[in-house]
Image (tube, rainbow, N blue to C red; front, side, top):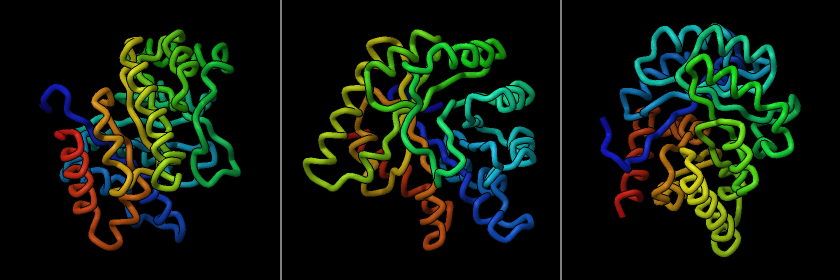
Length: 247
């Protein structure tokens, strides 16, 4: 059990599956990667089952549910197909994310405020099945308030713009927005996570935000694995997060 106030690391294994699918076959196996990640210090595993199945497959989700000893966070679009899959497998958590077929990766957060009436039934049905629901949103108090009003217990703040911004004032401005949003989440009773695009160079200021409970990181760790190995990349990220949180 981690001490109160510690920061969890969720490792996303989507892009292990991307490498596998580039050639077909079964190698590299994202389930093997997930098990290795857990051994290396990941507190949970994230996998995004996309409508077009471009990386994670239905069989991967079945195997992850069967073999993992740490929680599985299933990222998915708010569609009837994905709802049925989530209700069938009942992972520990589901993170509802926006999804466009033409995008290379998730671009921005859900419009929870504008899509409240559409999203609320998904939150209600998933929660009723004992699944912890989070919404992947921008650092905007309106979006956090909407998540709270529809009964989602968790939000995940999109850190992509922060990671892509130039160091200095542009990035500092976006960091301040994330800090403000995380504080607002705590005030209204939401557990707050963050993720997207985080690297060794950008994770420190995010990990230092005491009101964040979890970071979800994937693509960078899979890329670093080419040079240092998957377990080492995760251990280094874990150490970087822990050092930033302890300051």
